[in-house]
Amino acid sequence: MANTFKIGDVVKLRSGGPRMTVAETGAASGSVLCHWFNRNDDVWSPQHAGFKADQLVQVTDDASRDSD
Image (cartoon, rainbow, N blue to C red; front, side):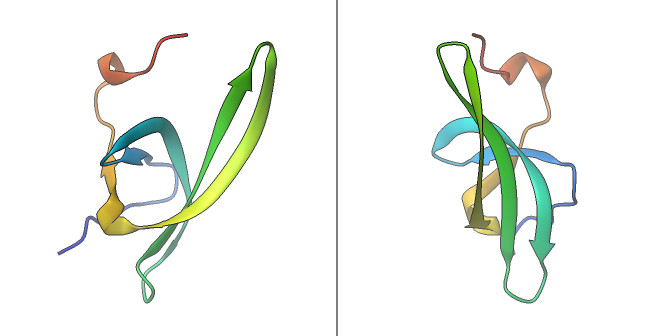
């Protein structure tokens, strides 16, 4: 069974990538809308996309945070 995520949870793709914040969950569809920021030099750009819950894992340890 897929993970259950709540709004505000910090997640990332099972395959890696940036930390993202869950903004919305679609219980019936199994989709999870996530927000994150991309950095290009000193400019941060907001991003968002929907993923299937099975593609995501919850980030539970601050030590796993990507450093800049």
